[in-house]
Every structure is written in C-alpha cells, then in structure tokens.
Length: 138
Image 1 (cartoon, helix red, strand yellow):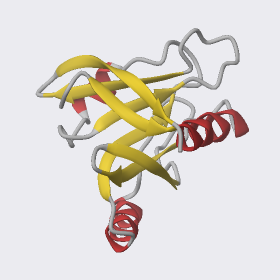
Image 2 (tube, one colour):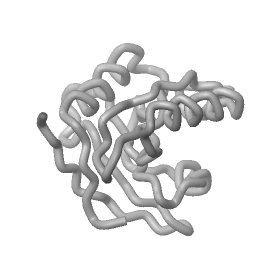
Image 3 (cartoon, helix red, strand yellow):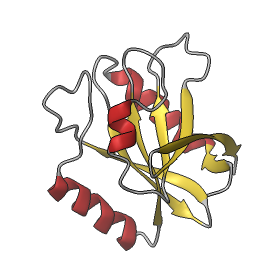
C-alpha cells in the first residue's frame, strides 16, 4: 500500500458524524470503493464486551457487510473504528487484530478538539505506518 489513501469528503464526514453520535462507545465498520478511492462506509454494530474500550464486528455481520460490498461491485479498502478516549492511533490490541494487511485502518476521534480527528494507518505483520489522507471531492 502506498503512503497515502484516498477517501471521498462525504465518507470522511460520515465517519466523524458516526463517532460523535455516541462519543463514549467505539463505532466501527468497513470502508469500500473502487480504484483505490474509498467512497462508502458500511457501519457495523460493535459486539465487543466493553464497547467503551474495544471494537469487534461479529462474524455473521462481517460476512453480511462483505456480501453487501461485493453486491455493490465495490472492494474492501479499509476498516474504521473510533477511540472515545486517548489518541487516535492504533493500540496494541488494534495492531494484534489487524487481520487485513491490504486494508487501511482508520481511527476516528469523536473529540471536537482533536488535532487530527481522522487518521489512517497501514498495519502489516505488526508494523504500523501512518498514511496521508487525500480527500477527494466529486
């Protein structure tokens, strides 16, 4: 994956809005698009035991979301979740559970004072690299 990821402005706004709707719980979902440009967010229910500190998409929902992405003729390009408290960079748990090395991992801060409310990372074999986010307008 190159050092940058492209996402539509509309999708980026949707991520921020979702994280800020319930700021004390981690939101999560999948990001899809075509030709390397993320154009849609597919929110998932957070099935983690403690949604204030972790996120998990239940396997059956993950399969449903993947089928929806394929049916729309899109490809999985990213995974997102929010960090209600602390900095929006991958935690040790996030790195350990980064099962899709080709996907960009977006971490959203619901805080209105966050210097970078949305950040993206490449996580591959335990190595984390921040990606530059290029916002694409229609």
